[in-house]
Image (cartoon, rainbow, N blue to C red; front, top):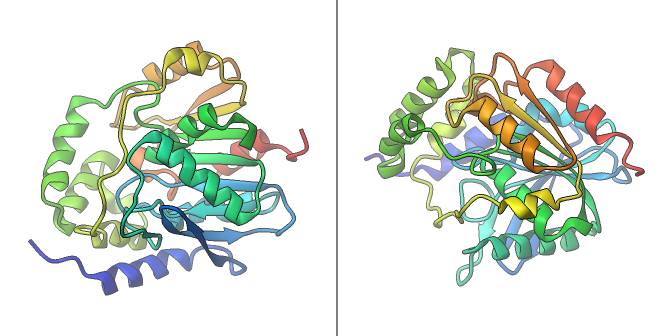
Length: 288
């Protein structure tokens, strides 16, 4: 197995980050779980929007296709998760092990950013984290959008797990590419720089990610936070229409829809233009 190449990862990260607006800045926030790296853009006095990426090599940089339109009305704060590929530096003696730890990490992150309350958006695993945080800290979250979330309303399809298994057991660039080609129906439509970043993350010295059961149905029924759920029509992670139906039956304030012509791993980096319009409409002016 080829060893992880940190220089190649950093170079690939910078190429994707260059697709962000020119006014972007890097912010490093100390937390009890290590230093969290945040890519920020948009007016400093605009309502804050915290974006959480998916797992693997997603990183904050992967929000580049949505950063500019969202930054017209928001202070975009895209986060590198702690302990996974990215530029966040986990503490040597402590890393998140439970959902409660993730909530404590986000509390410390918001405090370090000087943010009392924010909008949140998450993709895939990041959506799972954001939804759990909405249940644990509703006073800190104004609105929440979920892009093709995993383990929130339904489990993974068996075929998805089987195809992911070789990459999970022994990650290599070739296995990462093969998996993404299968899930997206061909990597030709994917941004080559983004794809290179996913490949270069193979073998990253990551800690074990926090996983767990889906949020409890009773807790979801009691959630008062407005939620926008957008599911990829071509997603191979779980049943698209099962997810939307279950969410609609559990969340009292949810808008659920299907994004046509896109797969799970193509979100949000190759999302259609109408996605940004839907997100900005849902977020509104931030005054409510």
